[in-house]
Amino acid sequence: MAKRKKSVIREYAEIIVLAVALALFVRTFFVQAFRIPSESMEDTLLVGDFLFANKLLYGPKLPLIDVRLPAIRSPKPGDIIIFKYPGDPKMDYIKRCVAVEGQTIELVDSKLYVDGVMQDEEFTKYVFGSRPDRRFGPFEVPEGHIFMMGDNRDNSADSRAWGPLDKRLISGKAMFIYFSWNPSSHSVRFSRIGDVIR
Image (tube, rainbow, N blue to C red; front, side, top):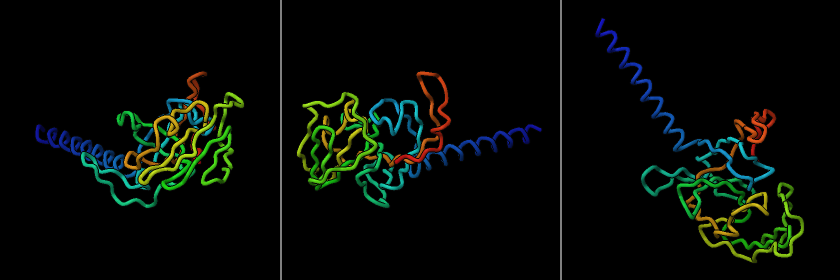
């Protein structure tokens, strides 16, 4: 009887160890969960949205060493990306890539220009109306970097404040919302669950 009890405990222990190892493997190389804490990506992403990020797309970083596996593709304008904040790599940020290395960006009032071409950005939000100081650039994105901006342009600390993002700080591309909680009404936003992030 004692032997049987010991073998059952061992079986459970092996299952738990295997489950933890599998979870760490998936989190490191494939998918990671994130929560939206701020209003900087409204109305695309809301405070209280929980989402999954694809870590495989840009090449996952191996734990403990500064090495990445080969990427499926490079970041491109329009991608919503989770990354380590340059000022504090312990913090995760999420913004939209608006330009990649070699491109020149300029923000004039509420219009974004990339390489001199005005961008069609239906997803952006400007909360303070017209402002004469809403201007940035022209700025050329250096090699090995991308330029990140929040969709809520008047309420986002992004590359306009802390500079272009080193691609080595990228964690993954936002995929879809798996849960959404409205902190104001203390209720679930059922209509947002399952939404693909674009």
